[in-house]
Length: 221
Image (cartoon, rainbow, N blue to C red; front, side, top):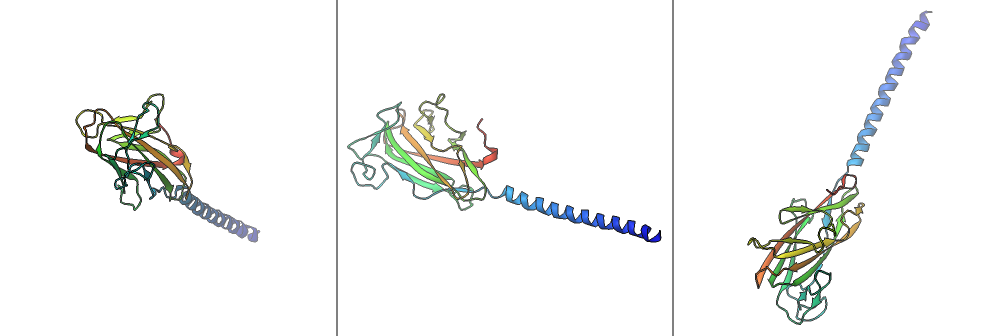
């Protein structure tokens, strides 16, 4: 009888210790899984941007020549290369948050005129540890998401010079909203056209910032 009474508290103590150990192990597992699930959201615009009519190109035709391009087919896409070398395009990558990765670009159009056209193509790379999606861009102080072709048939018009007249038409596309797993990359491109209201021979500077978001938080207003 006495042995049984002593055994019961001992058994309860052992069960309690087992439950405590199991809870500690379960809690630790949850903590580790949370760290894995959270991971690091990190991405970059890769070097090696390709764009038409780069400053410093020798006069000539084709993608390696410096002759200007003209948006002759608006509102349809595409451009026609001219036989003159007046304007040129310059692109600089920017790191706006100081994390060592490029997340924005400054596009400068030198000595341009109405219907001057350029095309900028680049890759975005997921160098974090969780899947992400390219979410939106910040353009002229306004956030934009995937272009709705029914609402924006030609793109977004912005006033670069601050004179109250829209100077530039920008269209973007290719892989906004596409899921990028770690180490994967995707192509993004911009079509830029100088509008009729832009001052002749002006230098226009456009800064474009890009935002990415975790794949499971993606939404478009």
